[in-house]
Length: 173
Image (cartoon, rainbow, N blue to C red; front, side, top):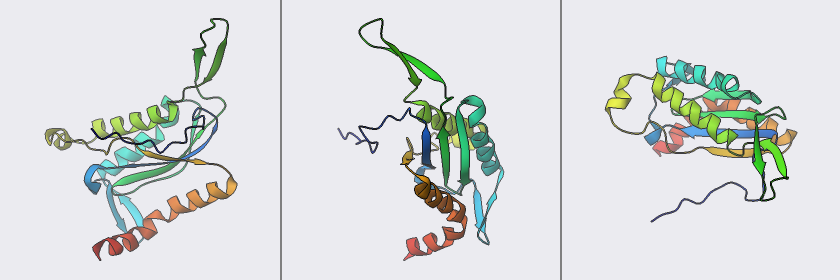
């Protein structure tokens, strides 16, 4: 049985406040959220649903702040910040007197999973009739460690629609 290796840093506390670059992709790279025209992303009805669901994340997960994001034809990129005000989970050690409070280490995963589920529920019934998963499992995330990296990821997201056709040309070769 194949076991997928985690790309997450073993020593990093993913519940700590910080910025995370997130990418999630539609299964088989199907272009379901719209198209890129003249270097601009034009969302169809499904794309608008995806945008609305993404923008709902902070309402469902107080303490998460959305920064730059883009819903592309077959994937979503975004920067999500976990603030110091993120929901706290009580964890206790074996010694019942030792109780620490920290953000859930699964907060980012829960938020992205809820986003994906909300998009899937919001789109038309045809996807449900196809009996196939709409998204690839999981998502990619990268810890943004400093302002320089934040700026690079922000520019990557903002330039994604412009670079869409360049990537498509390379794929055809």
